[in-house]
Image 1 (spheres, helix red, strand yellow):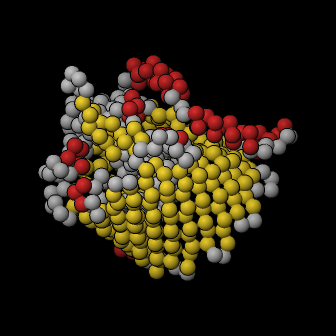
Image 2: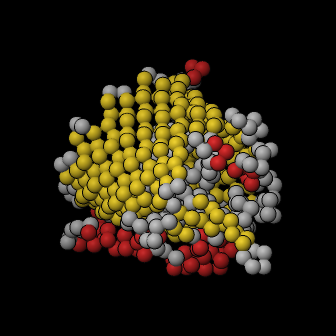
Image 3: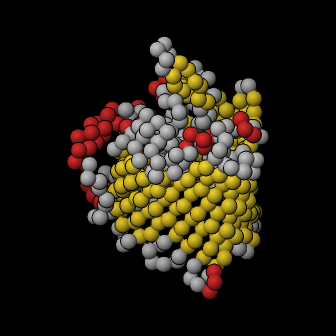
Amino acid sequence: MPILIPMHYNVAADKMIAAVAAMAARMTTPAVAAVALCLGLAGLPAQADWREQVKLDSTLGTELRWFPQTGLQGQAASHWSANALFEWYWQSDDEKSSWVISPYLRFDAQDSERHLLDIRQAYWLQVGDGWEFKLGVDKVFWGVTESVHLVDIINQTDWVDAPDGESKFGQPLAQLTLSGDWGSLQSFVLPYFRERNYAGEDGRLRLPLPVWQDAAQYQSSAEQHHVDYALRYSRQIEQLDIALSYFDGTSREPVLQPVGLQGGTAGLIPYYRQLRQTGLELQYIVDSWIWKLEAVDQQYQHGSHQAAVAGFEYTSVGVLDSVFDLGWLAEYQYDSRGAQATTVAQRDLFVGWRLAFNDEAGSELLFGMVQDLQDGSSRNGVLEASMRLDNNIRVRLDAWWFHTNDPVQLTWWYRQDDFIQVGFDYFF
């Protein structure tokens, strides 16, 4: 298993063992309860050979990030981390009942705030005629656009995993789905809230002040136990996919409030507001074109705002008489808050290219860049590439760069955090 391991691995081994123990102690009660719930409700057969029906898929990975510059707060120029993902899956003979348990472990040699022991999935699923019911912990994705996923709100973002915010924590939920010729209606009850994570003092892509996550505050007196609700209706009408969604609960994105303590210590405390979000997704496919739109209206106690992202993806099949497929992407990002927005997607233009090599290794490459249309000096870009070395090993290359001359821009604090990341995944 050719996984890259830095020379300082032996020195960090004791720290890794201690970190795993600490992460286990920090597992949330809902996560533990979800595992027990799945085991209790899965309806496992009484036969002794039920274990033979359980399938296990596992992935071990390692990543090394290299930063050309030291951090603004003097952080190290390289970060090494390791991760493991396991998935146990069982399905009844009639294919109407199933359960999935998928824990995820991450260890970071430099930043203890990136240590993680999470239950990505741990649910029981029952399927009937025109309906299905799911109970436990799961990851749910909403959205159609490439650069920003505005409507995706069920799961909390694992923010320290990657700058694109696409990595998510598992969410405790009960989900009922009804479907027919009229479309599909999903309803969710979300009984527990997952807080967002942030890089620690030794981490990269961090804010100038430390985020005191343990001191998080909530608008709701129920705090993390506030029960959230969500609905999503989707339907395909010929070449048009449409989805309407509604969410009522705790905002997944906190407001970071600066505070100071006696002695000059300063930090940021997350404050989680109550939110009502209405979302729209549209995707229209015609020939080699895919036209996309995501839009949201978010209502808070003391204000509201609207945001949208719209664009297209055009695919050139067999470009230049080769076996390669080249996709052209362009999206416009809008946020009614303008400079007060909490994301970089305010009035920006995203352009990108996706190259599929169509080879046995599954090689693919994506390059994208976001340009601020109001501030010509502000832009950021990403390169993502991957290929399989064989049936069990995949290698990944990711690169991010940030550029701005305006201290008002959110990426101002990341201006020395350009990095290249090499990762290896081993599947078994």
